[in-house]
Amino acid sequence: MDGTRAGTRPFDIEAIRREMADDFDEELEMELEDERLERLVSEIDASPRPPSMDRRVYFRELFRLQHELVRLQDWVQAQKLRVVVIFEGRDSAGKGGAIKRITQRLNPRVCRVAALPAPSERERTQWYFQRYVAHLPAGGEIVLFDRSWYNRAGVERVMGFCTPDQYEEFFQSAPEFERMLVRSGIIVLKYWFSITDQEQELRFNMRIHDPLKQWKLSPMDVESRRRWEDYTKAKEVMLARTHIPEAPWWVVEAVDKKKARLNCISHLLTQIPYGDVEHPPVHLPERMRHEDYARQPVPQDMFVPALF
Image (cartoon, rainbow, N blue to C red; front, top):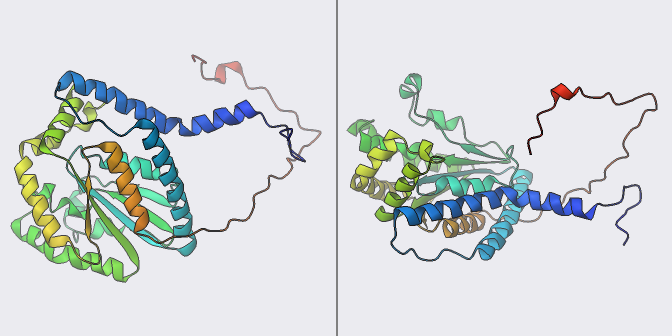
């Protein structure tokens, strides 16, 4: 092979290699970020930590699973499936990191994230589930809820943002709401990311000492740390009262972030049977050229300074 095809320019092998490497850079950058945080751990806490997963094994498995996620996305789109995946867990449990790895290679028009802020004054007067309904998927869509209607069973209960009657009404309504979603054909998956008391304390301290992460630590997060046991009790009640056959809870052991991501993605893939979707071959057409067209130069003062 001479690196050419009929009607195409010669391949630039080095350019192809650079393009492929750049495609993985986002994950590599996040991995380097993890390494930076691990160094910060040693400064905060000198106690030994169990070794994490080998980096090469992690990348190999992550890219393999992300390839399967692309296949799942194609299947969901082709079959017009509707999928809801709920991510819950304590602050700093690693939900966001798992969501990033799921969405990283997917089409944002097919797989999107719903991370709702605190309800507005108007929303507080609505049916509790109303603002979440607006984010439910249409046919061919996957919606990942980064926290969900289970806020009422967790933070709202612990922080006193709902009344005892509203709290009890939630447990009467949530299972029926989810059964209604499932009856309508929506696939509902619910994941709880579980970390230990010691691990959350460590991750919070890392955020305090890391200027790139301090924005993640809100006053509400700090207060949740103080009320660890209250959150534990609320979580136990929530799992007991909303673990239903139609939409069961799945607990992800999340002290090791790498393993948690891989285990969550691997499990998600087993919950939705999918197959291959045939795609018509794509052929680049010949570019149109006009003899009377000349590309105009861009003024130098319009360019971004090339500092790098």
